[in-house]
Image 1 (cartoon, rainbow, N blue to C red):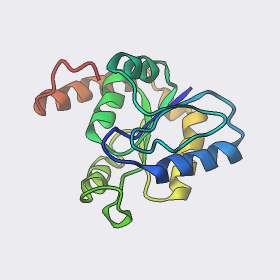
Image 2 (cartoon, rainbow, N blue to C red; image 1 turned 90 degrees about the horizontal axis):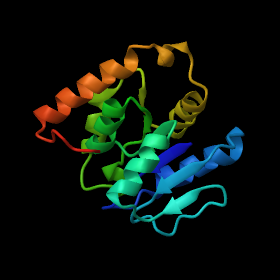
Image 3 (tube, helix red, strand yellow; image 1 turned 180 degrees about the horizontal axis):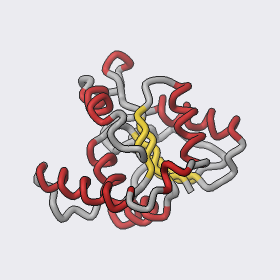
Image 4 (tube, rainbow, N blue to C red; image 1 turned 135 degrees about the vertical axis):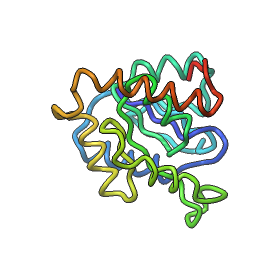
Length: 168
């Protein structure tokens, strides 16, 4: 199952529509659950779509997921690291009126290449490639120590940012 989260403050139609295009053309038949927030007009016949989820519901879907697809918000990134989840991130862009500034592009640039389980995408083709890799992980993502390394780093970053003890 793939869990999509776009946050609750702003719509992110580009991520949802691009994912839907990939879903329709990739042959992926697995379950998809999406928390769409302010992108409340989004629907898809092969996806469970929720505008909002309670913290417990969010945590349940997140933990069940094979992979996470998200905007490049620090909460989603740290949660993937902390829980050993593979993540595909598409940063919101100020130039496309998706956010108030380009801090998500800056975050993506800072994290790109640092963790083999996280993919930060700058365009549709990179997003499609990362999604293909999400559903067909190669041996590099199955290293036995990777999850514990990511968990430890995620905890360290969260503690440094003062969000220690957060469930997600």
